[in-house]
Amino acid sequence: MHGLKILVITWTHPMPPGSLIAQCFADKGCVVEEIKYNVSAPDITLLLNQWKKSLFHFRPDLVLIMKGAKISKEILTEIKTLSTAKLALWLVDNALLELHPDNIWPPHYRTVEAKAYPLYDTVFMYDSFDVSHCRQLGLHNAVYLPLAFCESIYHPLNSATLYDMSFIGYRYLNRERLIGSLKGFHLGIGGCGWEGSSLHNYVIKDYVPYASPNHIYNQSKIVLNIHSPQSVHGGNLRNFEVLGSGSVLCAERLKDLLDLFSEDEVVFYSSAEELKEKISFLLANDQKRRQIAQNGHQCAIAHHTFSHRINSILNTLYPS
Image (cartoon, rainbow, N blue to C red; front, side, top):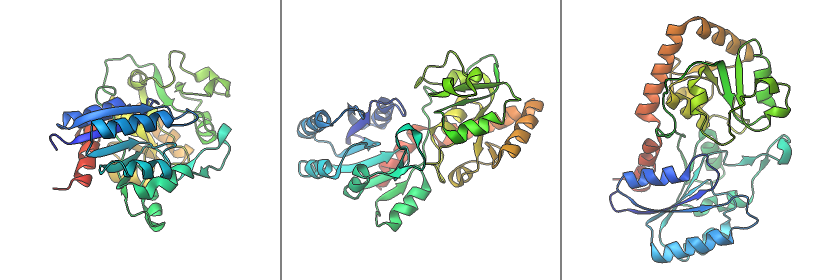
């Protein structure tokens, strides 16, 4: 793909870091330009103006949009009249649902972004359930693409162990209930909203929201993942980041994760009781725990970096 001109449109939220995605394309020999936009802005007129300038001056072969929040059917229609570039969307969260304000359940269906999906050449989705659901709705450009991790951010450190187990993520009801059942262990919790919960005594004081938790993962014997209800089959970024850090990952038995990892690479659970039993076993068996961590890390390095995903994107859009 040497010389392929790619415009990467990323949001200012640091997960995943858009500039690193752009760099992955550059490492493949592509010529890359990046535009960042603020998802929280009241409108995206500034993004649209930047986009038009780039189409005129840079003349990309491919426009890859990360997440695509607030990018409507009308905006894409206007852009398609200005360029013959391929348009691809990479969704790093649920394709069809989003949370209500204040995390009121259940989630509701998106409107603006979802109506634009048919205009893309390809929509990459991290959850195979979303892909099958969208295809049933007639969206045949949906393609399954698991998430990944960045090696420059997530990697093993020579850190002292501070926690039996840690969890980093937003405070949701299902997460609070499960972690609350694990109070017998030495826990560390980071993320937004936990200070006001019954688990506030376990909040990690030096954790900065949206900063890399790699050091905390390395200070933990086990790292717990609890997905939000958005994830039906697919695993979120945290799975790959924990494995990249070299730590033991405990995650729910989600279909896509079971397809990607073995029981010797990830510790899977289906209930609070099973999770507690497995945590107790791993904490009492250092050698087994370290072997699982090593296996998971080797698998992540070999198959699940962002460089691997960029290869998949290029091969899908430009098959040889």
